[in-house]
Length: 262
Image (tube, rainbow, N blue to C red):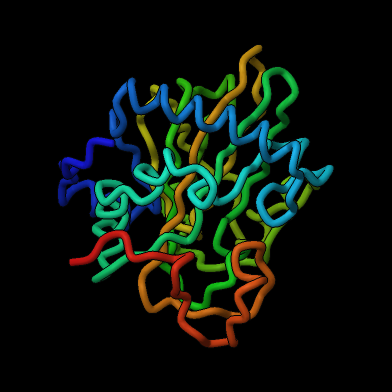
């Protein structure tokens, strides 16, 4: 992977911190996108055969929304340069403004053609066993994405609401009511973009992805980062359940390598 530093501007950093998200174009080359598509196709087939619940979630609810494959980097050496990319991690570090940043996990997100239903409005942070805020996701489009095939949409500034209670991704639960927001406060911004472009969003930013109404799958790779020094809150999570962390312990170790530092 080409790890030449991405030309992130101060204005883009300012925009991210104010709005809770940023869209960046042409972060990956067409060749890199093609390689990642091949890796994802093979990985999903492999994980379906193995059906390891610590690596893939094919529960009824989640399969209605998307196919989710977690921590590809542990099994597929060819994807490690992307997951451990210093270019992507440095973007994340600068957006947050921390001294060093660690990998939380990667996951492939695939909405099947025709039958991928919408992913409800939600935050990510309530599902992560972290005490301190600051974790963020890089969502890389591996296909051109639009509202027709399930691109992400964000509510600008919604990260300022802080961590709310987790909501179901399939049942009718209203995060806006929980946040005390009225209809006039809800002004989604759709992140239509070409393959190889990406978004970064704060773990507390409200986001949504519509169903895939096209005949082709919508493939994306998400890489989640968190500032070094973040501590464990004791909540269950597939990434930490086997590690024996004590509540309040720093999230660190080989599974959470430092990927960028000042």
